[in-house]
Each structure stands twice: as C-alpha cells, then as structure tokens.
Length: 257
Length: 225
Image (cartoon, rainbow over all chains, first blue to last red; front, top):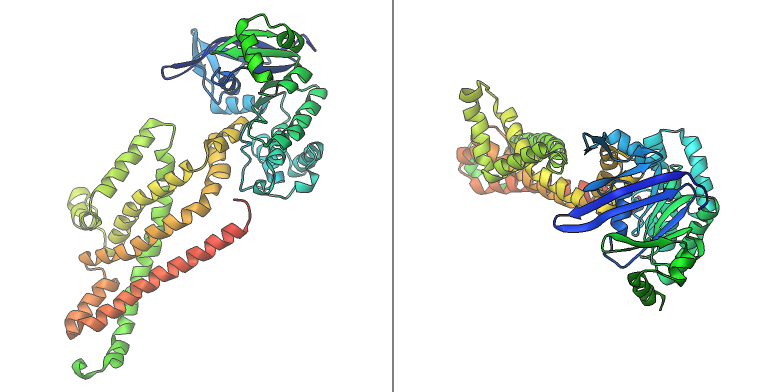
C-alpha cells in the first residue's frame, strides 16, 4: 500500500436490476495512490461495481464515500436520499472514467472532446484549458491528432483520447472499465502503456480488466469477484501464485491458459 | 370577356397571378406552422424522454390526441368550437396556423424523440461521468449528433405539412386550394386551374427538398460522423 490514507470507501454495496441481484454486499477501500485491479468472470458484477462508484448506476443499498464525502446520496434517517444534481456533478468531476467503447463525442474534434467538460463544468479560461489539453494529448502521444475527428482514429488512439479527456478534469482517481476489451490485439499495448504511465505518476486507479499481465505488473492489489461478491483480494504475487479460494484458482487456470 | 374562347396559355396567364396570391398564403402557412411545430416538437421530445414522469405523461397524452384525430377536425374545432368554448374567436389564418402547428408538433415530437434515442447510451454516460449536467449534455453532446439524421424525417413531415395547409380552405382561408376551387367554379375550366395548383404545391415541396439536401451536404462535409 502506497499511502495509508483511504481515498474511497465502499460499504455493503448492493445493486439489483429487477430480480437480478448483481452486487451482493461489496466492502472495499482504496487508498491514495493505490492501483486496485478487479478481475473475475463476466457477469460477476465487476463493471457494475465500477459504474456504481460514480453513480452511473444507483446502488440499491450501501454507500460509497470519496475523500470522506458520500457520493450521490446522503443518509437521512438511515435511508439513502439522492443529492442534488449539481453536487453529484461536482463529485463525478473528481473521478475520471474510461469506457470499453471509448464513447468519444463523434461530432467534436479531439481537442474539442478534451475541452468540453473543463469549459462547461469548471468554466476555466479557454486558453488555460487549451494549454492543458495540448499537454495531455502530448502525454498520450497524439499531438498530431489535435484537430482530427474520432472517426478517423484507430481504436487505440480513440481510447488514448478518452483517457486524456478524463484527465482534463484533473481527477483525483481514475476508473477503467475494460478499457482494452474492444481493441484489436495489436492496439492493446499502446493503451496499457498510457495506463502504466499514469500509475507511475501516482494516480489512484480502479481497473476492471481481463489483462492479467497488467494486473500482475502494476496492481498494488488484485480483487477477485464472482457472483456479485468479493471472493478474495491481495497483492498480485499472492493472488496469482497462491490463491486461497478454489474459485479464484479455477478462474485463473482458465484465463492464464 | 368570354374566357371559353381563350386558349390554354392565354387562360393560364389570366389565372396564374391569382393562384400565386393563394400560393403565398400557402407558403406562409407552411413556414410559420413549420417553425412553431418544430419549436413545440423540440420541447415535446424533451418532455417525452424526461426523467420526470408527469412531463412524460403530458407529452404522451398530447401526441395521442393530435395524432389520433383528423387534422380537418382539429381545424374546424379551433375555428368553430373555440369561440363558444373559450370565448376565443380566431380569424381563419391564425386558426389555421394554430391547428397546423399543434398537429405538426405531435409528429415532430416523435421524430425528435426517435433521433435522441438513436444516440448510443454511452454518449450520455461519458458526458455525465465527466461531471456535465443532464441539460448541458443534451444540449451540447446528444442533440447536435441528431441534426444530420433528423433532416430526412423533418423534410418528410414539412412536405406533408405544406400539403396539409390545403385543409385550411375549409374555413375559407384563401390559400392555394381555396383560390383554385373558386376560380375553377367561376370559369368552368377546372382542368387548367387544378393543373397549375398542383404545380404550385409541387414547387413548394421541391423547394423544401432542395434546401434540405443542401443542408444535409453541408452538415456531412463538416466532418465527424
């Protein structure tokens, strides 16, 4: 653990979609600067967990606190009451998210994609926002694509733009929801490299991925989920070499071969 | 003068100026009702997809009402039934504009809603995850992406609207069809009169289609999607 300050605390998180109980009580804390990689079979609830963290899904029960502040809802008389949209927007702005499908805004150029949120939400000066955006594009190796439209970029380039777009809001933490799963195999590396650079810079990250190599290499902690529960967690060396739970072992046997 | 002795061109030259006056009213009806229909339809669509249930219901009731009854009846209702009902007496032109706008708005609502819903969910999620509010995301991210794909169905509806204006003749507004019928009845030479009236409507629709295709090319060369 890099730093003992807890930045995010998930407590007893449940999520149901109708009769489908997807998350069955998740407790998880993430420390400042920590890289938590969530692995598990599809349908285990790992993406839902990530989407609950910035309230793209509303939890059925349980709480998420970020830097000591509860996200999306307040406890009033032991019941969750949604916060005002404006407050939720401010909370979301502190947590960057990268999606499997990139979700770049297709009607805007690369730089406009990066400027949209800083100008509309933070209302910082255009010149300042532009300078930051150019710096971020340089960081993800796309200085030559500033005025390109997303359609003209490869999947790997689009995902790097998406990462830069999230970073443009200066987030305190980044969420990656299977960020490389939609990419052609030869493009995975360039996105993983950008993610690794972020780790080196000390970004707090929660990463849902099927890239076991990435988990092994950069995770501070690997969390294995199955059936809506956390089955086991620990440093990658432990999880990958000596998993304690039979289910973890089975899963790893399948994905590592 | 005995018009029965005039040949086709001579007679046409005599009636066309009067038909053009009617066509001007038809164009006015189309443009004004089209404008208000589009405006109302935009709000209708936002109501229709609103997270707030009463707004959704309001929009649904509105659409059901105006799509579920004949436009001709709506025109007659506004012209003849509003005066005793609300003590509101409208002239033929404003009554026609009101009926056409309200009717077109119901169809535009559905066109805009379909356009908004055709944008992948991930677009709204990406915007919200960045901290952008629902309203700003709609205005700056979702709606701009619908423009290009909305043009064909909007032109379709405007073309229908431009021809539906002929129904306002029922309350004696001298738009193109009303003028046509009167001239036809006066001179007992219906075929020339209806021929030129048909060309008049055709002209309006072709003009509209031309403007739309220019707009569409302009939007697609702008880049992006």
